[in-house]
Image 1 (cartoon, rainbow, N blue to C red):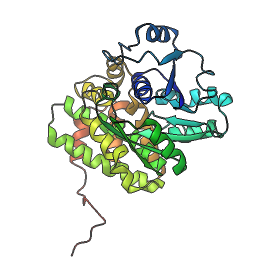
Image 2 (image 1 turned 90 degrees about the horizontal axis):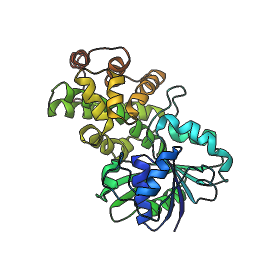
Image 3 (image 1 turned 30 degrees about the vertical axis):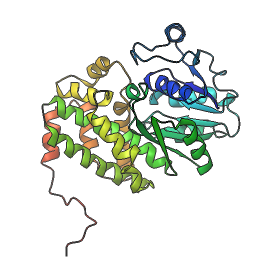
Image 4 (image 1 turned 135 degrees about the vertical axis):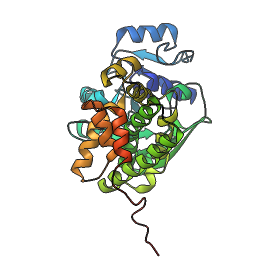
Length: 336
């Protein structure tokens, strides 16, 4: 049994608390919001984030940030991506050398273009940092619907330890050494999901969505490989798997925000209506910045940024994508 602290009582942090307690671990969840902690202690249900999902009585809740970190075998960092650096900075004095911190948020920091794992390692150099990702909507994990993810760390020993901690009959976990690829796939697929949702909002069909998913993978692969990640990762759970579910699922906040934008709402209006952090909006500028830094062509990401931040009509963005210069699908394949 592991002693686990989860930082962040949103839908994902709550779902993981249920999973890990069911796995036999001791679980404490931290939230900065006093009213949220009191509600969870009293109701053992997060009615706003995971309605109808019962949280086991053994899961405890706290506002004590130090207590939720100090002495824990594993700390799960489940705060939204824009708050990752600030949270990591606040806890660094409580983290012991070699203590395991698992990031489960998805994003790239706009200012520095760093992945969340890199941010945590910069802020807490003494920590043993890992990342858990994959097609895993909290609404389904909390209800014990079979789900598969991938965990990556700097060493095989840490990855296999965390694999054992998280794995259950309804939550299968694979390992990979490619932490950069896992994090890039997790963050960039949210931008593509915004595009897919926008196409839905415009009234386009399955053909359009399939095209966006397929060409979106091509863009993510081009950038990721240029940055040093492995191609195989982007065709795995944290790449193609997560992209498919985020572009298609009713639970996807990124797809939902894109849908509202396709119907004519502004980015701000869409985010307000979704009422949850839309990670793709925060990652879009960072993705464009990475494309420019590494001189990689990413037309879908570019058009998403124009729609989000330059008030370009979504229909015009789709039209410009369709009318780009003729291309070869797989340039590496030779003609006979």
